[in-house]
Amino acid sequence: MPADTVPAERHVLPRVLGPVAAYCVVVGCVIGSGIFMVPATVAHEVPFLGGILIVWIVAGILSGLGALTLAELGAMMPHAGGPYVYLRAAYGRLPAFLFGWTEFTIERTGSMATLAAAFARYFIQLVPPPDGIDGKVWQGLVAVAAIAVVTTVNILGTRRGSALQVVGTVLKVGGVLALMSLPLLLRRGTPANLAPAWPQAWNTSVVMAMLAAMVHVLWAYDGWINVTPLAEEVREPGRNIPRALILGMGTLIAVYLCMTVAYHYVLPLADIAAANDPQGKIEKAVAAVYCSELLGHPGVVAISMLVMCSTFISLNGNALTGPRAYFAMARDGLLPRALGRIHPRYQTPANAVLAQGLWASMLVVVGTAIVSGGAPDTVGESAGAMGWISAAWLKLHQTPLYDILLTYVIFGANLFYLLSISSVFVLRAKFPDKERPYRTWGYPATPILYVIVSVVFLGSMLVNEQSRVQALAGIGLILLGIPAFVLLKRSDEPTAAGSDSLA
Image (cartoon, rainbow, N blue to C red; front, side, top):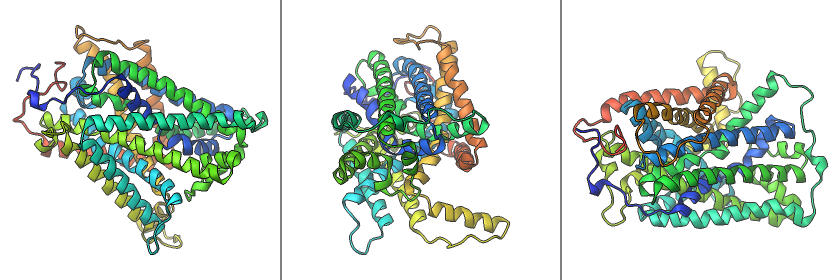
């Protein structure tokens, strides 16, 4: 088929999203549970404020560099699928398929499961489990219910899903701004809490601790890429997608830095680090400790409601954006045809939305079974495979559902972000005359810096003992996509817009 073949009109999603919706997808997807939980982990790993701020700034700049680059690709190729489209145009069908495969099996669905688990983690503090139901099981049921709600909303209409995103983003950003202003309004906090600013000496262990903390901070920033899969449905994408990405990232970096400083202004660093609670008790989470210090018990209730709203809207953003990649893949003949169908009434990729929701729910069920199932009381000293398995199972059993799901998402996501950003070099070489409504600011330095920092970060995950297993598991999962590609691809489909071509 000709390289510029465009799919039939019945296979094209309608442009129903304006600039406000696009901006709220960026901001609303990113601000989830991270800023309410991650600062405690960062303070635990990096016990000095200067290093903490460096971690947040570097992660924000890295994400911002990615957003500046991706804005060019989204404006140039405004088709459903986002990174899938850019990877296929730059590198071909297999790398693009592996992105979609990993997105569906763990990255996007794992993010949804993680957000749903965070939502449930706060919900069960306000609505305790009924008699006879274990607390961990109750948390899993609530998480599955949250996924079911956002899946249903986004099947019923893209406008409905985007409207929920806009309203929810306004509410949660307003809530975060209110949290920041509390120390000033109540005249609480002291500059003495901002010490120590720097470590007594810089060494390799300090740098490695900062890189380990950055894994969690990048999770807090994760989601900035989400507007690009919706490009086919955004009006005037050449203008609105770059604006949404650039303004959205600017907002996020400012909000995260100000909120982090507010935490440390009110609470001593040791108290924030102690809020890195391995048992996941909400009243010990850093945002709850902060609000309790300022407002007492009503503050804990208020922060629980704010985090529930925040994570739910991020969950909705993933339900809105993620299925567009599977829809585009099916349209290109890389997934079953059913996933490429548009609902005749609601004009949504309903089957793709449903499939994503079902798999995310399955991840929650599996995670719940791990943390609520039986575990050995002690780990024997026996060597060999059985001793290793016993120790690993005990560690999983003692890890909150939220943390189990989070760690498996980060490596694969950042690997494909790296490939997507680097595709700007390939596409400029392959299609130099293609119209680009927006060109990456600072090119080629901007994408080069992103690539360098990403390589260092991914390498640190492989070196660090705490993240190595998850990183290797992520690589293994990606490689499993190769036989899946052979089994699932169809050779009888025409090339769709935004795949091999730049139509």
